[in-house]
Image (cartoon, rainbow, N blue to C red; front, side, top):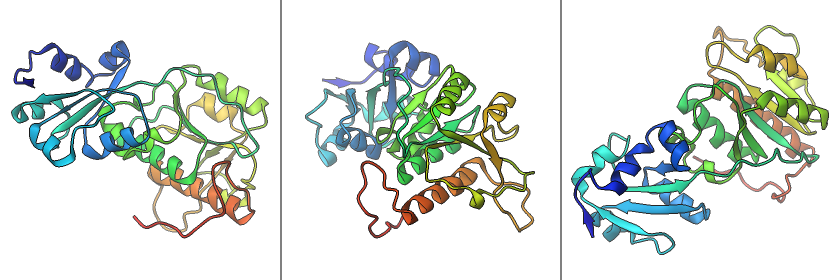
Length: 273
């Protein structure tokens, strides 16, 4: 059956996933590109339904693991938030709320505290995936990690590591700290450099708002605040860039000290982008 009207109940429900309220009510979010749909299928993320054009099905084939509904191509510009629809959108199930994972000796978290730019959060999730982080914790005031823009910016990394929305983030941070996890924050005015730290043990990097930085509550909980050396004239770094610097220094130290992650073997050749 080919759907040709936006008034169809299925398509109205799909469009409601553009908003955070709609996603929360449905317990679902949307995947708007071919890559994301393919990554979700490969990662065995629970998908509810795939909506696609006949042309897309002819090119990529109909997924056998999930129901597929055909939609007229002319409707896609109003079904998705991308400027250039690819002829496919999938409805994915939001993950269940879970307990804070028990920190291991190599626990390695990224904590988003009131981060508001979708591109920044998506890039941070992607980088956290690349370096083998244990999880990304998302606190109140941070952009919804399951919004279409964030999901696209993750490039599929959202399906590779836990991204946990934590309403009581500061309680979580206290708990992690009590369990021996060092909480590190970056600051512009501190003599302690990122490169002075020993990052082999369990830790979490705290990432704050693009303009205001970390909240006072997060700063108070931090084990230590460190700076990223900037001998040039730039006043600061973009939030996702600063986070990437910290994450890759953590990875560099752990590899050089032969601290492997549970799912990794010895490091092989680096991949290119």
